[in-house]
Image 1 (cartoon, rainbow, N blue to C red):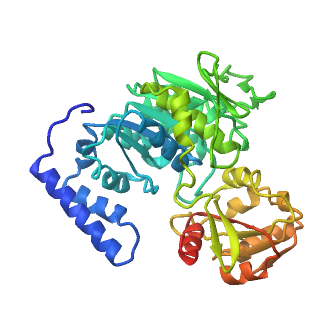
Image 2 (cartoon, rainbow, N blue to C red; image 1 turned 90 degrees about the vertical axis):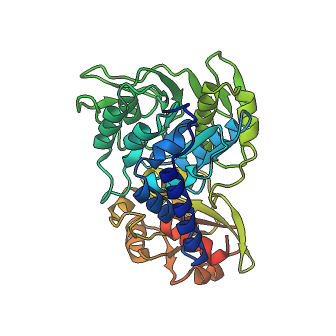
Image 3 (tube, rainbow, N blue to C red; image 1 turned 135 degrees about the vertical axis):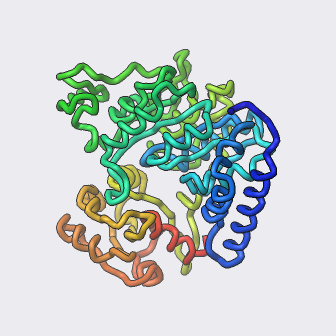
Length: 412
């Protein structure tokens, strides 16, 4: 279907109109953007609508445990050098939210779509993407998502024989295993800070050997492929060996890795690395992530971390002690209700920071910090935590719904 620009059928047009109306009602009622309910209504009226909306677009799918929202935004910004883009920029990444986003892109050339890991194979089947970016896989939402090796296997089966160019992280064995069933893969050395989900071989279950940045299985021979793109310090190395400087307003090594993968995707569509990377500089924040806001006469930097790998990357970019840190954890449906992952996070890295703990599961987090030997204070509200913090900019790290709670409170 991709590339076919046939007009929408009357049924599809009705579904789009009804979906937009449902979304507008949801927004008017103060229940969020309305993208999910709008997409659900539209798909109820036309179950094939997602494919119909994608048929005139060059679709790029982005999936990962961490970094997919940011990478989607960076790719979209890069591809705007070549034509108009429609994207689910607010992160509604299941079929209903994706359908709602694409309904607003009738005049677009590209569809840059973030996809929840569990839905990748199905969305790829419906949208026939030209490119798929696979960044990483690690434990997350243990009560909802499959174990990481099972998820990699589902990706591998679902993407087998795909016509898309798969841009995949060569440093994550689970991603490599998933992508290896695809005939056209561009390997990117984007790095892997969190390795605790990739010590056993996804091919045979053997113990993975990880000397330096390399990795291989000593039992079956499964090994890291040779990358053609790489992150090297503050530069992207392209397949010709040229080094292009990365200038981002987004902080941290992880975002440089996201920019490297994004540059590789943009190149698939003829956008040169220099142009792509220059355009990525325009991105200052992503759905509130990395924003610095003023609240109760204090500056707060808002940081999202949803799982052990994400917390590890976030710890690497916060200001040094004695910068105050507020931690907020919920365990609602969108977060996953299992908080056992707290015990996998390397919280001792926060030693020396004044720490304040809020959120629905603040007592669970308090127990974890107590065991880690850290000093902290449990607070009932964000206001109390901010007013209790010593001077200086405050780093606020929260998981998904806790992050949304904070954004609402600070008016972001």
